[in-house]
Image (cartoon, rainbow, N blue to C red; front, side):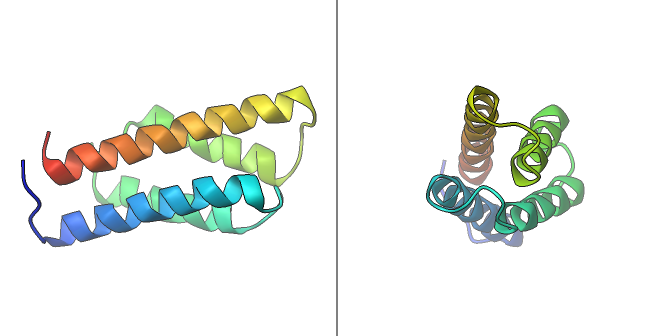
Length: 104
């Protein structure tokens, strides 16, 4: 349970930092920003590049939430529900990154 500097750990740290940054910006920036979509592109590249590290359903669910928020298909209470689901996805990705880095 220690940290080694490897390419996998550095990329995983980058993904974790990007996840926390997008999660923080999701509440302070506009909903129709393009940065979360860029993040989801990075997330999909990580998910595809390092197979079996993240669950497919969580990644695709987060992508769906991001697309629904970006293109504003919903409003009001439904939008708050989608935001809450996206926060759960961000928490899952952060937790998985911590587990992968510390090899739990």
